[in-house]
Length: 124
Image 1 (tube, rainbow, N blue to C red):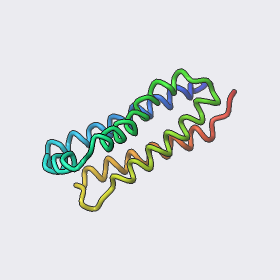
Image 2 (cartoon, helix red, strand yellow; image 1 turned 180 degrees about the vertical axis):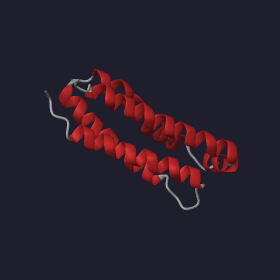
Image 3 (spheres, rainbow, N blue to C red; image 1 turned 135 degrees about the horizontal axis):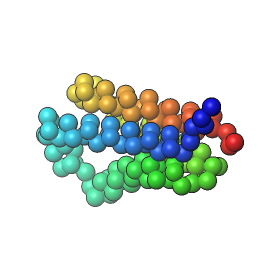
Image 4 (cartoon, rainbow, N blue to C red; image 1 turned 135 degrees about the vertical axis):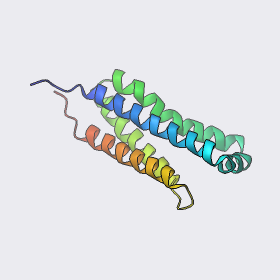
């Protein structure tokens, strides 16, 4: 029986989440550019920096999932998964296009799976 490298699985899940974030945002910018223009016009530099920092967490988890030792890795994935789930849920709005809601739902399911996968991870 082949053992699964949990670090690789977690890193790959973060890559999957990031592609969903990216493609959802690109589609909104292409199909509904005014949504982004209105949002950007009302954001201060501090808000933009905060959102950038929040998005840096899943980007960083791609690398950290591969290099952190077991205990730190497990907790980093649980905490980052929770933060990313809340962040994705925060962006949900009935006013958003249906395709954006689809991407957000996939992101939330994936980050919840990351939390569960890390939570049930036992060091071999």
